[in-house]
Length: 313
Image (cartoon, rainbow, N blue to C red; front, side, top):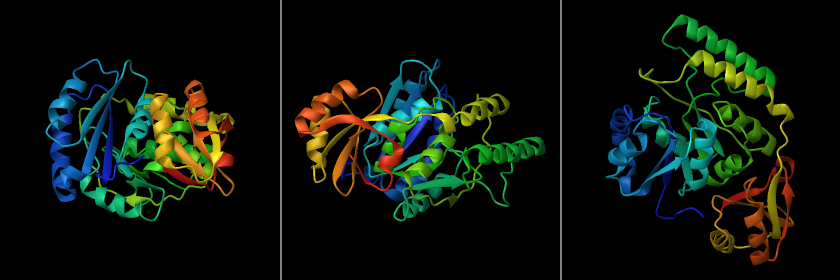
């Protein structure tokens, strides 16, 4: 369930970002003051860092009324960290952002406005149809990369890799539950799944600064992303789900999930029934959810979930 006391969750995946969190927070502060810090939750996901990212995140964001640092025990990749952040976020709207806040956080209210009309509101750094990086070579490489991604995924969006994206919580959680990718190709996979689910997408133009100090190597990342993107079309997306009464109360689903120690579930309501969508490893706990709701544990796919009303539980 979303928290009625919150308007927005900001999810920050972070791997070895201890040195850049302070500067990122300084860029975020004016927007937090505009939105009201008491209405915003910040979730930093420490992706198995070997520096003091977790401690730094607690220090930097610890003064906020709603902040959490959750950690993966080992480095698994941006995709794993992003999926965890989307599953634990509690506000009805979610924005994901890089630790350095390279995308100007003043765009956050614009993303929130777009989410009143669409399920997803990804930031787009493309001005004249391509992203202008800090070097001509990187700009040309980025344009070629975009064309290759379009070839494999057929998304009309040119800036798939922008880390600044907005989600309605139900849509974001469902994408996190379904997605497989552990690394940087998660951004492409989310659009691939959004298309399969029939989710609405409204890009938001954003401005950005190429902040120095990143430990990410663009060439290596691009090769890894293209390898994962090539496999998306053959990926079999099948998740456990509990089929139950269409009018099941979200509060009852949330209570059943709590008792079975599951979190980040989604109720997908159709015309005849509701499907409580679980994570791929949640089948054992899902049996308890099915018993509590008088439902049936089975599996589901994106094609069956397309067009349903999505509610976080």
